Image (cartoon, rainbow, N blue to C red):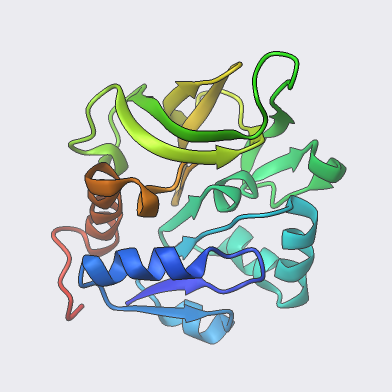
Amino acid sequence: MIAIIDYKAGNLASVSNAMNRLMARYQITNDIKALEQAQAVIFPGVGHAGSAMQDLRRNGLDEWLKHTKKPVLGICLGMQLLFESTTEGSTHTLGIIPGKLERFSPALDKVPHMGWNTVSPTRDHPLLASIEPGTHFYHVHSYFAPVTSHCIARSEYSAPFAAAVAYKNFTGVQFHPEKSGKPGEQLLRNFLNMAYDGPHSMLA
């Protein structure tokens, strides 16, 4: 079973719809006991980093995320919160992945970055299996993560940014795979395969 973390910043409907299309068993929850029973965790998010962190702390989910050894996939804000901090409200985030998020410059391009953009893997990783360089994914974000050694795919807007990251058992994507058609479905299937150590089963 896959757990989808339920907090006020979660983009739950589209993620659960994507799981339904993949015929994956999942549960939407903010209960730590339920999260402990899951095979893997999806950590979605939209909105403001500061209020999202407040809600995570309220339920003890911040500490649970920092220490879990389960496979975790952060999506959009969920990926951003894995980093150390963001200039959005000068917010200290989970501190799992080194790095600080910056805001795109409105002097260079429209903010937020919204719409389809190409993503190119920078190194091999199971999350990106069968994802070709230059594949288009759907983005909506104003803040971006730096391209560091933890970046496994990058994209560019008014600045280069990490489109996908991996660190220990944590992975994250800046774009919305659940809104990105067949390529997004492939990426989510890859995560399920990682969680189940092979092709996932709807009965798992």
